[in-house]
Length: 79
Image 1 (cartoon, rainbow, N blue to C red):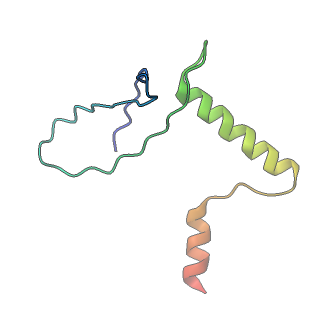
Image 2: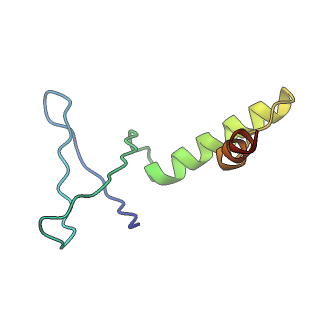
């Protein structure tokens, strides 16, 4: 999996168009996009990680755990 980080500006209708030069013609790709407004002093990648950490801390404060779904899937499979 390749991680491609870039910035862009939306058009007047609020649409952002991405062009990803992957160098592999006629190949299907799975694409995941996280779009977040860019803030001064940080990149969107840093911002979403900070937000994820804040959510984990909020869950811990309430006694809930932020768990890895892979382990939950294994538990369901083994039942």
